[in-house]
Length: 69
Image 1 (tube, one colour):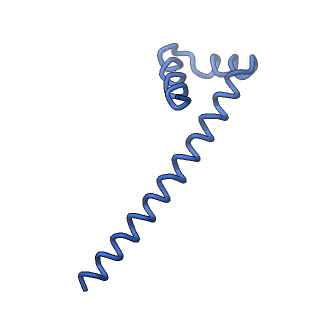
Image 2 (image 1 turned 45 degrees about the vertical axis):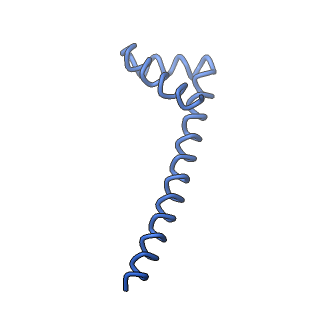
């Protein structure tokens, strides 16, 4: 019984690890899309219009650039 539990736990860990990598990859793709949009003049202007608070803009940009490192 303990062996079965151990194998199930190992399987769950593998599934969680795979899921985490998949989620991380999706997040990187979203960051890349946002970064590409902000590089265009239209994208930047829209961003400034939508996010009026400069501190929020800085936070968002900081998160995006942190992901680019």
